Length: 504
Image (cartoon, rainbow, N blue to C red; front, side, top):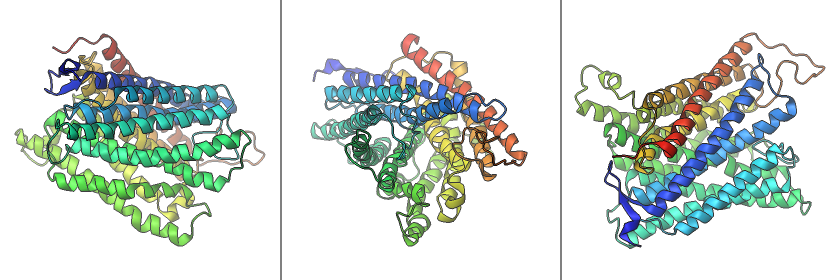
């Protein structure tokens, strides 16, 4: 491949491979478009579950909730992660993408699958929610769309590993080990292979079932589905923490205090973290009680150990870097003088805080067998996974976007003052949203019910504690605030990609 297909980034000095750059742009922009679609759905869902507004009728609520779950939990995040893998495999190593045409095949499959699935949902033929549990049955094209998306994403992940292999084989990258950020993406890629294979593996028989060609055992479906549904979040965790290390370096010049320990934590993720998927099955008769206790009480804490290592390493690295800049007065001058106006830093800080406290602590508690039985079908779980996927992963991805735009898109950020405000709006909104959900869930508010006031006209009346309506209002205010931050992110990202001035 000719040298002319590379350009040198004027900010970092990295060599950016032209075909890799095009694929990163395509995946990132597509991801942002789908977060916009999922964000509109999120607003409609929140305004319906907020009793003071109660916007949508029942059938549209469940239809929009299905689209929201798929577009936010799967489509937006995995498109962004594929772009991030190409960044970590090609740009960070000054290498070329192994097979760009294969990358475009992966992109077309993912885009086609995502569009097809959304069409089936919005057409009213597939109101089965994110989990798609049998005996609920969607249109066969709905399942086909998910299969196409999963296969495309799997091809993209394999292309990332092929790029690493070529970088080694061609002598482009000769260091003993890959950079920590790339190592973290390797962990995310390994988890992704496991996850996407299971996704395709369960939706192929489900497609045949929807066509009347075979029977489907609901327990078997749930068992295999959650190897996709929950392990997708484990991809997100590994990718998110890799982005934390990257943003720490780019914003304050952070270096890990003990890089070997950080790599060990990623290895723990690869080996152990997917066992947390089982907490979705703790009320099912699939596993014995002894196995459930072993999973939730013992083995899952090895995954928690990995997260605790990162939870100490990233903030400690940031503190050391800022103290080296001279912020040494007292215990917290370094925190006070941190670059809070930099959207990359503030997004990372909110992501660490929300994921570490709201998401991490609640996840360990809700994942234990005793608490899970009473919490799993309440809004406590919804608040938990909004803190993980949105408050943690999405905020981290938003923060790194402000560096991808100048480095890969070669564009200066537009509306920099609004960009500085964006993570604050989104982060504070997510704290209110997740906190309101979890607090309302303590009183037994169900996860998915369209109408908690009259329960759809049920003859069995139920009166909530008035505190529930206060927490539902907190959730609604948080949703409006987070959506405002999301609108800013979409506008700034697409506006920069389209009309941002070239980087000097």
